[in-house]
Amino acid sequence: MVSLRHPALRRWIDRFVAADPGLTALRRAVRTTLIVMCAVFTVYLALQALGFGTVLTIPLLAGVVSLMSSVAVNDPTPGKSR
Image 1 (cartoon, rainbow, N blue to C red):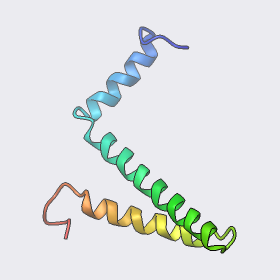
Image 2 (image 1 turned 90 degrees about the vertical axis):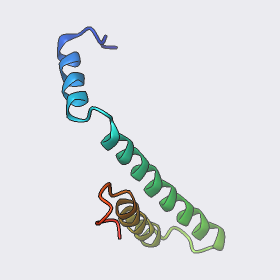
Image 3 (image 1 turned 90 degrees about the horizontal axis):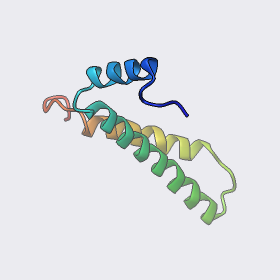
Image 4 (image 1 turned 60 degrees about the vertical axis):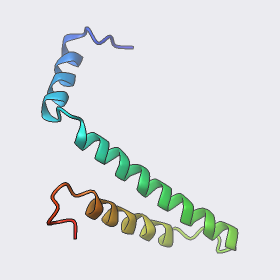
């Protein structure tokens, strides 16, 4: 394991924190990723429970729709979120 005292690792962490000081972009990215994963797995499990087999097209479509809606709702500018 690499210690945080390692100069190269410390430099990359400093660059990341300087680019996103409040870590808001990281929080939005994590939230959007979790929303997409939940949508895909929920639809996949629902299709499995209904006996449709291993169809992946519909869960992936649900993931795309959840990604688009999450990005539209989480847009920081009020005029673009409509």
